[in-house]
Image (cartoon, one colour):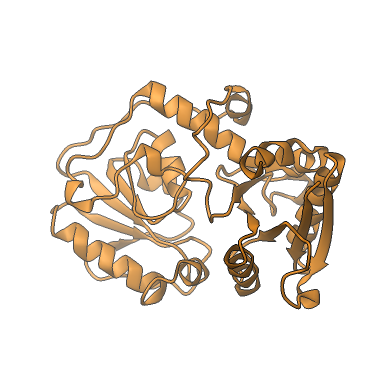
Amino acid sequence: MLRVAFYRSDKTRERLVADAFTKGVNACGDDGVVYGDKDYKGIVPNMDIAVVVGISRAAKRYFNEYLKAGRHVVFIDKGLTRHGDDRYGNRLPKYYRVSVDAFQATEYFMRRDRPPDRWEALGYEMKPWRKVGKDGHVVVAGGSEKYSFWHEHDGGATGWAWRVIDEVRKHTKRPIIYRPKPSWTDAVPIKGTRFSRPPTVLTQELVDCHALITFGSNSAVTSICQGVPAFVLGDGIAKPMGLSDLSKIEDPYYPSDKERRRWAHCLAYAQFSLEEMASGECWAVLREELA
């Protein structure tokens, strides 16, 4: 039996996820216990696994301390695909991505072939690859300050974007669109790029787009599904479908449709709804990596 400590704040989303996840852990015969942020006094003795939600400073602390102690950590955040939960007026995601001992499941999620059932249930269309002319632009999809804090980017989110854009300019004359995380209201434009902000959505920017560049944002999932090649520079679930060497920006990677389908089927087994957490379906998949 595994003992699982779920750490959460008082936010509605985290309470819902903690209750559903620990219910599923217990349904599978393991022991799940929920702890509030205010209860944290270091690693709980005899706990095998910590579960954390989101990219808060508290979550990063738990994540790092448990890994340093040689224990497993399950990380949970918003889903890899954008589906709203109608019960909450689309304010909360329907799916949550889950990963073991890492920010994303990138290193292991394709070790096993997965059936197409979960992907097909999402209703996503895998569009044919688009190949645009020399005027096609490049989208640099940045993160937020919280995201950059987690990944310890020098200069924060803007500093990361500046460095990437400078590198891109060494290898192409294509127009560059800078699109930071839409919810990050303090984002600022970068000289020589077009600044993309809401209400414009990513799929609009992918029209006539040559390639999308990101550290590990789910924007790369959208890009690959829309038929636009991606460059994933860090830990991102779309990394197997793209390149990370920006010197190859004019020669991006176009995986075969068979490869994209296999990736998509595996991706769908790296995110789960609250119901699937509560039933134990999510925990059963995670346990494959914890065995």
